[in-house]
Length: 312
Image 1: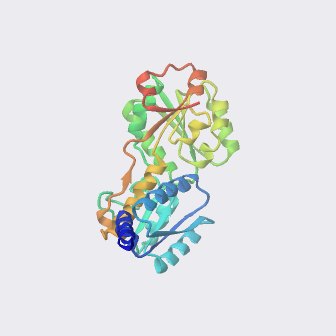
Image 2 (image 1 turned 45 degrees about the vertical axis):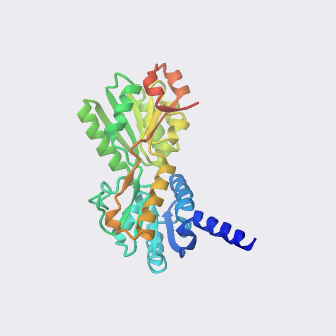
Image 3 (image 1 turned 90 degrees about the horizontal axis):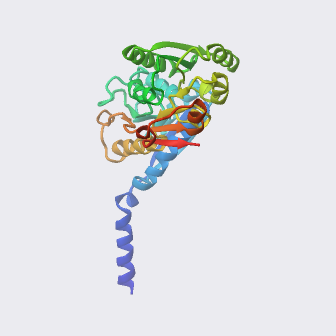
């Protein structure tokens, strides 16, 4: 009987793998300001770590008040943790300025190259790697022009001062020039300015395009109402649920799982940070709002609809 119990115990421990015996690895996770995307990415990271590296223990400092508080937290993590995860584009830029001496992983962030933090995405420098939600504007417009055939002009709505706004602007301007589309962008500072701008520009452009910033994304319903018959498209998922016609977006949970894989590569398997490339979602999701398509009288092809997640 004792031999049977011992054998079963050994089998169970073997099934748990080497991680069952591993020493705990402490990792700090932080970002400043509220961020739904950060919460989603870390959810994906937690789920993946529970499967492959339960010895990695996460300590959170969420929604810190500003970049100075984040820098102070990073300095603390640098003294007490084996590694740290820093979320949001603003956090990526802060990490780049900080110059961490411990492995640092960024997430819920725009393109770290465009942010001026990592020059070589395949062999990242500065002890920083991670994941990015960035998608090329060219790949997005290949879908946008199929959803809205005959598009001739684009009006991009952005939040002034947000780190991702300049990136959205430059990328969209470049792809519009390549496709021969008229292009305008507006950097906005308030809801009132946003409402006045959309009301004044409604009917003058083929589409309004919502940038990946809170000011514009959080007010999608107002933009759609004021836009009238002008289709509203987005560089993110959330606006589609709030009434925008369509959007192409990286899967935050998938990116969280990729982030966990990078942590394991470095903190468990001992790889150098420079040998762990920055990861992207190469198969992003297309979201289409069926009610918006019907209201606008658009007949979207079956080929496009078959690839999309339909939002009612």
